Length: 436
Image (cartoon, rainbow, N blue to C red):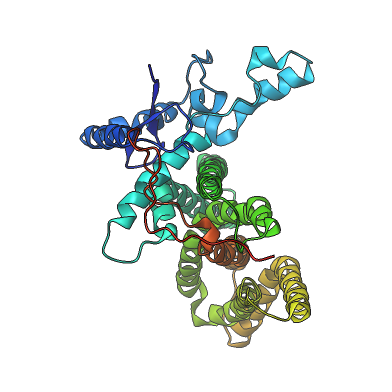
């Protein structure tokens, strides 16, 4: 009797029942019909698909692991976003306990390649039935859509809390220190200090939740895509024009590009929002003079981002002259490394340069610069750099992942059905042999 798992993607919109048997084995027509009926039955449930996700929103959960459940599946909200569920594994390893008694590093069923390949297969089948040209990138986006949305939401809250702290609370605290002792309210000052603590704590937790969700989503996406490639190779008699080195490169390097792209995708999408908020606040605080320093910082960031994009994944893979390709790749890697070094090195300097130029222009026009205004401007520049600094890295990973997803080796194998009544079936066959 076959066993089944309820496979809900924590934040996915499809709740599909898959067999526990390996997903890489071709399924029969009866198995395909069972999966289709399971999909249709599960789609009628509105909240069953979020069952595992809703459990993980609880602040605390029982530490007793049931069956084959892993620590990450039993972790509560705070344990998941602070990674405290890993501590018991690390402590058991430090104490030298037998890993068999602590279920050390067991893979969650929701993160296993068997489950995620089956999920991505279903999404690819839906994508293939459309009139437009099917795209593996669109199927992969459907695969990570809901988890990507929640990761973006967490990072958005992280930026909001990081923006409220320096712009509102710190400025109010500086204004409070400038008031006379007779007019100052001690309770108001304590409230501001406590509010800063709460806002900063919420920012750190939101940032941790962003990476916790993104990393687990990237892990599932990489496993599903590599499973597609392995399934394609398993049903090929030989690799034809694909060399073993190219195939190993996909398993070793290209999969990591997909992992990095999915991990950094929420940061790339949400980071420009803090730039818009910073511009609006600076215009409100000190007027159009703030755009001078902002322009200096933006030009530097845009140039670095353009270099990082243009220097990656734009070489012609069918170049006949191998030496020219290697020379071009060497130049591209050198320029990319220089661009990333400039972005990393100048990232901490540009807020100071932008703030200094802004203050010089602002004072030269005859305006009075108050201490709370100066401190707020400097902190806003640093907050903006924190979010924008991730864009060059994220855009690079996205460009590389897009190129790798378009490679023919990653195109899924369609319609691999097995009929028990037919021993051998050949459709549109072309018979040839290699010429040595």
